[in-house]
Image 1 (cartoon, one colour):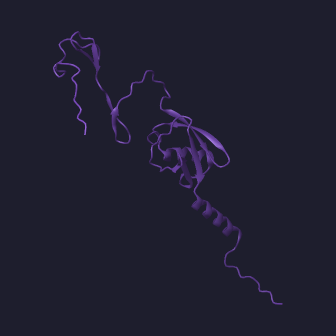
Image 2 (cartoon, one colour; image 1 turned 180 degrees about the vertical axis):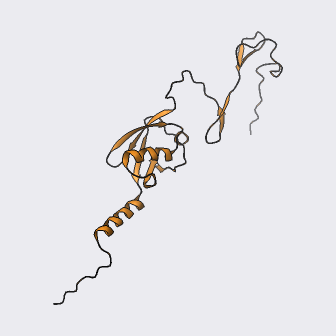
Image 3 (cartoon, one colour; image 1 turned 90 degrees about the horizontal axis):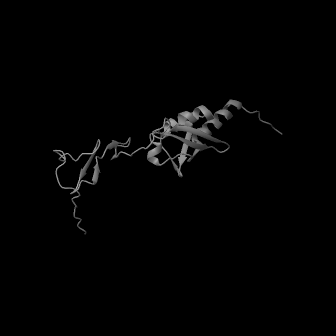
Length: 164
């Protein structure tokens, strides 16, 4: 087992100020000659409940959280623009408008695994221009087939017997 020693990067207490060494909002100087800058750490809470250090964004654009997901079915391919923090259930709602399949009839696969409706796109790792596979639920497909057959055939009609 290894023991790690903590190093002190700066002497002095930051609780009571830094003796006039503060530079600009959130940053403080320390050291003998005051040339080391320490910035204040900002935290954010992710939708999954994890507390992480907030990322610095250099330029914030209007569509910053938007990604384009390529959804491919057996016969066609659709490009869908959606927020990166959306769920697969929300993606299914958008796809229901495009493909005329109800959300309960859809199965979405990403990286070879079927994804649940409450999973977030960014938590699973869906990035811009990633491909998601859309399949029709086989059980519902079979039910539709049986309903179609039941509509064309009259179940329970007697057949005529042929005697030779």
